[in-house]
Image (tube, rainbow, N blue to C red):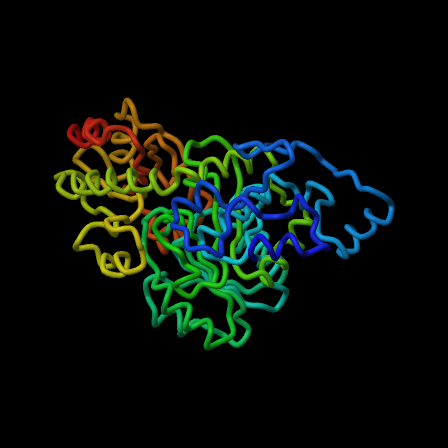
Length: 421
């Protein structure tokens, strides 16, 4: 919508006008990341303000009624309409080439919103085996409890996806790259499969971010984010988001409005500022990750490195095609360490983790600081041993989120434990 079109719309409150950047013009990603979505108030502020208000004041009783019956579009209550949150939503939607975004309190809140918006009792959810443990827990323990049938296939097996589609399949859900093995789905293939069967394709783009990959351009219907990760980039606050068409996002918005799965204004402001440097940070993350992966793949005490940036990785060509940043394969990788005469695979992995002096031992990722965790006993510990095996989460697996420190220091810190196995 152009600036002039917005200004001529009398049903739109002035504070809902997206007039800081005309997205009808052909701006690049970095310009959009810095400027899109902001509406300047009468104060003329240059930086985006934080609107810490629960409610809003109307000109009259009739004006309030018009807002509530949606005759007039504007702020109603910060559980579902807040200017700071809206700025973040607009900016993220522009970066993902989506019509609209809906922000949530966390990444898991975004996934729950997706489930409640697009699934009902009797529907079938088809998901990848390779998912974050909490996502599998949500699907198995709660969506199944309310009558949604759930099944899983390997994310990289296109034939398995096609064979698993049922007449009641309503959503196909995947992460690409996946957690924790950074495996790649063929989003274009899944998009065609979904269109042919009237299914929604939902892609978690948390690890790649729009700086590397835009799933909507590849055939997805909805993009999911844990904004907690790279969109913030410094491990400060929690948040999530969905991006897609206006129709699909209206359904998600209704869930957030009714269920209160809302993002706070302060967190939205933090994410908005994080988006300004997203592309620059992801370039640096990827540069470091490519070098760390080369170190790991050549270390004698590492048996396997799961990272699509390696030229012999089975999904290297697909990742190169789907990721629009040259040399950008993300900064999350899994690597498996070898057991020794005195240490089994789990003890060997713990030894490597415990030997670090700089790297943070934490389950978060997407931080400026390099982080490391043992998925089998942290992020995926609630899964059964069989489910962990299906997801490829072995006892010797370590998940690494490569940060922005000097890459030589990251490598030296990992070498402390690997060299002493």
